[in-house]
Image (cartoon, rainbow, N blue to C red):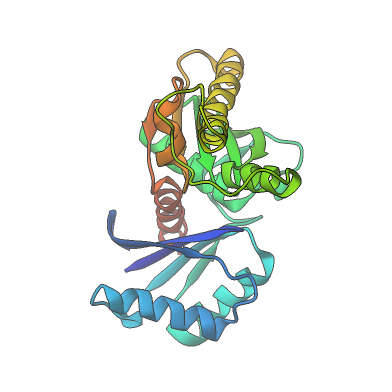
Length: 257
């Protein structure tokens, strides 16, 4: 079975695929200093929690935003699992054309998002990935990655606000009942959830003005379930979109031999 791994700056999402079917998935904290041995132990523990083992993994497809971890994951595949690995990066056949100034600078998760969104919804489309940052990935009618926008993530922004304002404390990130907060906590919750929903809607409106009004907007990422329901311009929420893209890229490259 394929192990699809999206290792971001804050969290790592893993999915185990039997063909096109996602049979297991996990979300863990990314530890940037983990060695290949530590990563293998973590993966083994996650698999064993679901009654599976490392022996079930016959291939790995990785999108990694932490360069040091890419090397360690390659070691996991080569030395611990002894299985082939496809690493999303420059030179790989992803099926996604690149219409940007510097293709090598595009994060591998954004390429996977573009592949999955176009395969599922066609183009033009936009992926809104709620992670450490909020990435907006624009895909043309021909399935090409055209660029996008990067905004601070919800958690990053609220943490920065708390660090800079002495009278503001950490609050639970959830939608308040009303946009007009009546205490400090609900004021901050309104700004975080409804404020970022407005940011997303505003950027999607501008993207559609350039891509075409029919562009489908798909939300994914760890914070998507919290913010996307309050966005008027988001059409679909796909929590495993990036992993689906990795599966497609794996199939494209494994089929190529």
